[in-house]
Amino acid sequence: MSKLKATTTLIIGLLLASSPLITPKPIQAASGTADYQQAQKINQKNKKTGKKISKLQRQINKLNKQLAKLATETNTPIANTTNHAASELATLDYQGDNEIIVNNNQPTFTTADLATTNGPWQTFSNLDQLNRAGTANALLNKSMMPTAKREGLTWNPTGWRNKRVKSGWLYNRSHLIGYQLTGENNNPKNLITGTRQLNAPEMLAHESDIAAYLKKHPSSDVRYRVTPIFRGNELLARGVQMEGQSIGDNSIQFNTYIFNVADGVTLNYADGSSKTAE
Image (cartoon, rainbow, N blue to C red; front, side, top):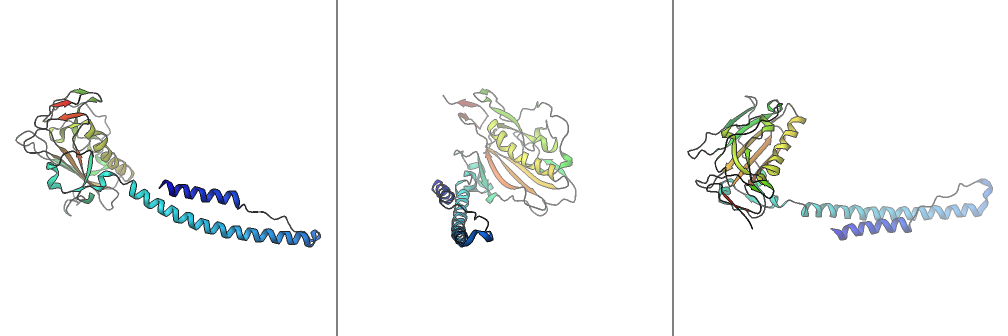
């Protein structure tokens, strides 16, 4: 890509340095044959320069297309190069990418799931036999967004064995459906133990995208589903699957899995205990 940029810069530089347009002096009746001939020469030079400019512009346009193509290829996030089925998420181990794409980034909502006849709503799964939270679902609308400041959380979800690490507190009480979207707060069915690395910026980024969309389109809806992924009877989730789809368009459309990890810390998913790397 750097070679293409250098070539484009060189072409433009040569053009500016060697092919300036020459403005002929006004031709007056009394200027004589010599002035007329000089003006003709200048006009001919300008025509040649114009042809050079057109040719170079075509080359520049071609190079810009190549640059755009390379930018698309090289700037594709690592997460987008990886695709996984939802059924295998619990078996995956963290390999360095905080977030990976599921089902080609297509959410798996059915036609019934996307219905808006009942207006905006949210539902939460009952806690399981281990007291773990399950899938949270919602049809989001700006009317659900809270205006009050969020209060502190007191519920300790499963795997809550928090401690301080170099970056601050290791764990957050992570909302499945973020507070900024519906105002749901200290609800055990909406909270899991999540690392700061999971909660913000990863989950927060998707939540904020939805919030921004709803604020810009107050009459629109977004179908949303968040599923904590546990392996076996472990108390600490391995990660969270997030799915979103704006109704009527694809402004919001994603199906992604975020690992519940913390760089430099080894997590024991069985109980939430941890060991800091030395």
